Length: 411
Image 1 (cartoon, rainbow, N blue to C red):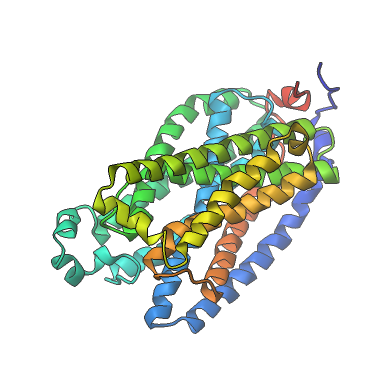
Image 2 (cartoon, helix red, strand yellow):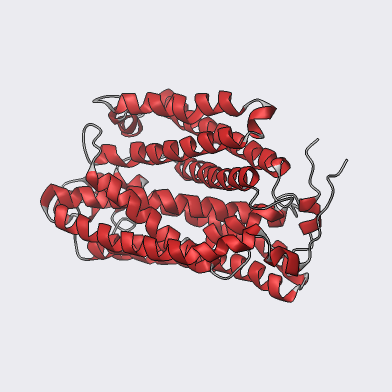
């Protein structure tokens, strides 16, 4: 049985509380820009040289990838909705589209690191130190691939694909709001398949380059999908929070309901289980094979305090959210969804911290550099999101499947 539909005219939606929300975007934009400028200055002054500069590098990689993984996860979500011709998600899709285009922000955060690599700095990536590489036969063999110019060239290709795909998906959808052209939906459906393939390849190789090569001796063929699963979970957490806020506040009456909240939270629940499956698979295969060059990576994460972080991830990233979101009623409870989704975003950050920081320090460290780095990364992404969302609807008002989304009912 379908829920009653609401009037879907462009005029009515333009006057809805969703559209009014966009008037606040400029404030977010200005505040975020001021935060970025002040925090970058604070980082430069507080950690200008030596080990402090190296710590900035690791904090920068960690936090840039935190927001980047969310943007890429949102882009995967948008492409999947188009390729499956999903109707239920139309009223939530614009938020994911804005996040997809906002990949511009995290990409810009990678630029200073690329400049440092091309200038010969090796504080974060040991493979960029000629003296270190010269005494290591393994790294000598990897040098044709792990060198700063080729690394930068590959990153340029990845970034070009991400920005082109994310901005195109958003602009095509926003353009449909103005023209009402149904062909735009068909075009996005046709192009989403190659976009998904390109995203899969670039995300995998970018994770090899930027994260796995922090320990250039270690390798894992499942690493790319591990990063994908974490980013997809985090992006769905953001969408679940958005849906929960809209439902509880009435910001999108009859457009985003508990039915949509239920379904987006089911996806969050499923992908978090998928993350746990991939994490366990990577661990189990390395443990079973017992190859020294593979097991050393896990050994670092099972001693000197990193074992505690591992346990927190095991229970905090999987078991607790699994139990909390398993009941049907939990997926329809706005307050609980906001709490659990926010918790999963924190766990996703901790997961990336667990991947990155053992290469920086023997034991876990956390302080000003990590906090400010996170604030800078989130602020830059917020600025990008504010820029792409300005003056536009947060609901695709001319999508031909909008009526299906409004009438969506979970059996």
